[in-house]
Amino acid sequence: MLHRLKPAAGATRKRRRVGRGQGSGYGGTCGRGHNGQGSRSGGGVKAGFEGGQMPLQRRLPKRGFTNIFRTAYSVVNIKDLSRFTDVDVVDPDLLVKVRLARKGRPVKVLGMGELEKPLTLRIHKISSSAAKKVEKAGGKVELLEG
Image (cartoon, rainbow, N blue to C red; front, top):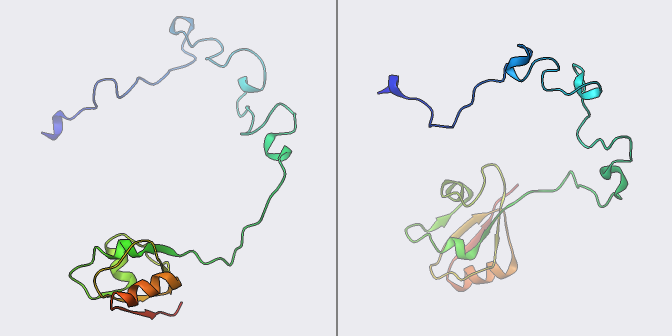
């Protein structure tokens, strides 16, 4: 009955009403302490601020770089393909459907595990060891563009 639904006991708290007199416990300075940056409206320090000391983020050396032209592949191992018993052709759409790959990413197959059933793989990339295992099982590899 929807009209009887309510949160579990202890799941919600009352809102803190500050500035409503000394008897409330949050009168006067309203829980902000006395003077200083934290007591002002709009005050407070930004994340990572260390009181004027050189912050840790700037004390540590910079390393490496991010290659903006990198291609991010969805990686699938041969052992993951052994679950396909009722299909003959494995393509990226099927891998996305069974949640082995992410939609919109090219697929790369790596050679961990063994394959018993001959499968036709229509994928974007494959390692040499994985290709050998697919062909040894009687399957074949077709590389896609992109």
